Length: 256
Image 1: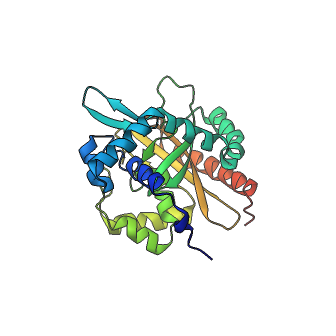
Image 2 (image 1 turned 60 degrees about the horizontal axis):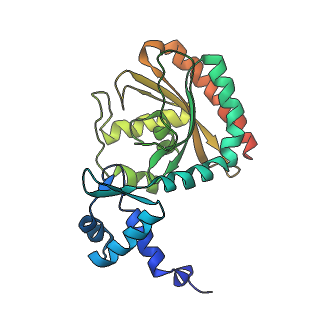
């Protein structure tokens, strides 16, 4: 059987390499930088970039004389999100949680080593905390992210924790030993908490969603201002999230 890579089209590969040059740390790049990162000749990079701009997958930013990802990519991403069975199955339970607690409820997946939000429902409080659909956040300092880490195979976890743990606040855990101990606790109790570890004034709780094979495929979370998250309320919301996560997991084929 032929290697699937043998069917790759070189021009498409190069276009994808260029799109992959952009991330949260490098949202905008000039043509020379794009060519260097993608390993392409500048003239080749320019032709491909121009084509991507013409089709809306890249945008030219006149103020900084650089390129950034275009809105057409967002349109494609939302089409993927809308067709996800997971999102469809989770929405009724998320709506129920918002009605019960009047707090934001979010649904995220683990993608490229980060938390990726695929649905967010807001509560009715004047002060609400919420990520945005399509937003990516780090794993080591967010409740949903820590859940994903807690259930990763050891070799995948080691690869992620082999990188420095960025301190976003004074409460961010940057010790590998301390973080591993916390992940063990979260795995045993079935939910994770972050208290002002990513952003001051925010506390979040999250519970894991499993698929048919027992793999964690998503996290359902509840972020809130710390002023409303007493220890008792954290425990109560955690139990409600766990119950919803179990129900969604059953809908995804998990029967344990």
